[in-house]
Image (tube, rainbow, N blue to C red; front, top):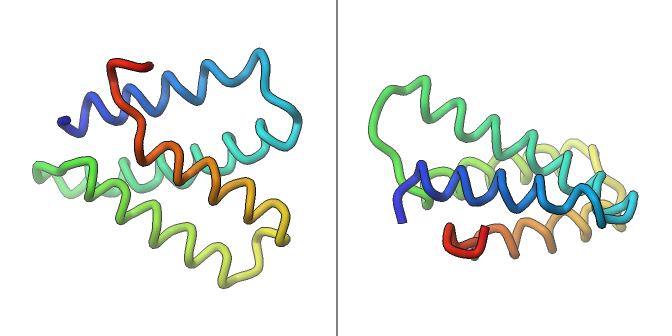
Length: 95
């Protein structure tokens, strides 16, 4: 899968959550989307080709830094990590 398809699939998945997600799920989706968009933006600024694995590595780094700085309590951290694990498996055909 190419990076453009992966970015679109993740965005579509997160957007589709909005009508049915709980408040906690919406928080996790919004928080994670910020980290995802930041990772994509940094790669786009670099103006070099990138793959979904590069995005995933950027999100992992960003989340690790945020968690280390205490941005999330334990329950929020668990929600975000569960959603992130799922998003790494998103297939454009499912979005």
